[in-house]
Length: 230
Image (tube, rainbow, N blue to C red; front, side, top):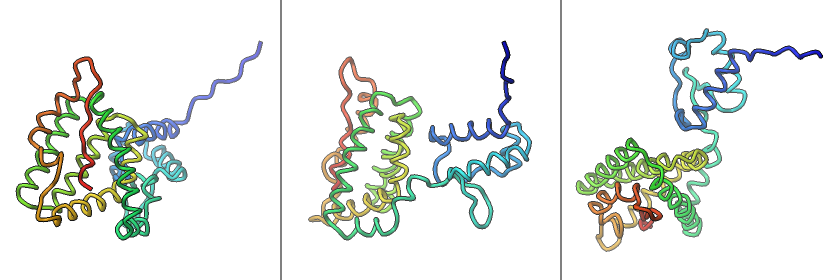
């Protein structure tokens, strides 16, 4: 009997696999800059030529990009679909904006459900910190900062859901999401002088409920109602 020679994988392929896993897991997020080549090679304990070859392979796959002025970044491979023209349509077309809100209901409702089941202690700390910061901005009347933190809160929920596909879709929507959140909040603030309505007006009770929904006593977890801000 003859045997085929066992081929050892190239070091650069191992580097590619490791970086791909980090991108998939959301450890490296779209738009994030990688450390300088010298530092990254030291962290991975590999030679710079092997690292350079791996980065070139990832760039060919569309997962990394080199930007003018220097630096290698994780490509915005999901969000590239959501361009400025789409943002303008959502901003000016009520029907399109309603469709976007409907999509948010589906995605964020599912994210909240799975976050209630899967959130770690670190996830809980981040969710609570985001919510407290958002409430503080609301008390100050700082609508723009509040909207930014609100988006961070939604992303934190997606991260706490620990669903890789959902997380990447949410990161892809983040640009449009920020526009939508701010637009919706402006509508709320201008509506008969009222502040945030419904669930956001019960911020203290929502904050207290965060630990409870993540540890349901033998029943399906309740999800946070985040979508009443339209």
